[in-house]
Length: 337
Image (cartoon, rainbow, N blue to C red; front, side, top):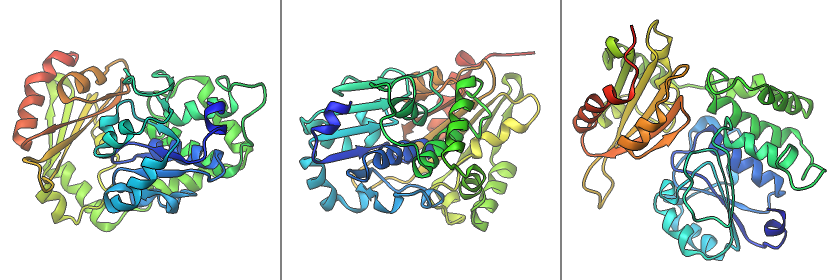
């Protein structure tokens, strides 16, 4: 990794569509490690509650700045890919990524990475891509005996954001002692973890709170025999509550607060974009304990992720997505007493 970075003059950092905390944290941690000597490009807008992150104001959003981004991508002599395993997760940027013959570094924790990168740091057992970046820069994956850069408050904040959000605030995939040893080092570097929690989770609009209430009261279905909950929101329902990017973040976790609900699925409709024939239904999966959902997400909904936290998507109507969901879940979920 170091040789590729040291020989590069124009570095571009990519992360996936609909960037979450781990995507933002991993991309920005690498950006600050490089001393700001890179350009982060994300396919589409990130939630406003990540706007506080140091360096977020320097990120280019591809769908809003195509004419600016394309020359930057074409001129890159090194591309660093964080928190995705397949160029398709970049949407229209994916083709630009593959068209540039420059070296590429992939840093990710999802299963089955596609073969497109020069160097691959893929560890599906990691809590998050941010954990892998910490280990590359300061831990057991670094190439030298010395840390690759000083761990400061800025990098610590980026890494912690990914650790916190990709474990559901440390409620799943977070039992290894090493995770908390990393957090201890981040705290020693000046991490203000309570401020970060407040910035991510306690900055909602009134519309978002009302949307959450509507989703739980009106749109949640339970399948008691399989300890399963489903929430669906159409594009029209989202627009009714003036939906902004990130307003449904965390909604999929809420049904797991119900006694005897171990699986939760959330479906959100995106209206068709010009030139596309149908809506896209984005799907989030969550589970508790030894009840994986990532294989279900991968095989039926073209996605994947953690055993307990995965995502997928399907093009078509919400009705089609729900029918596929109901036809498939008996195959993948444990039917428990």
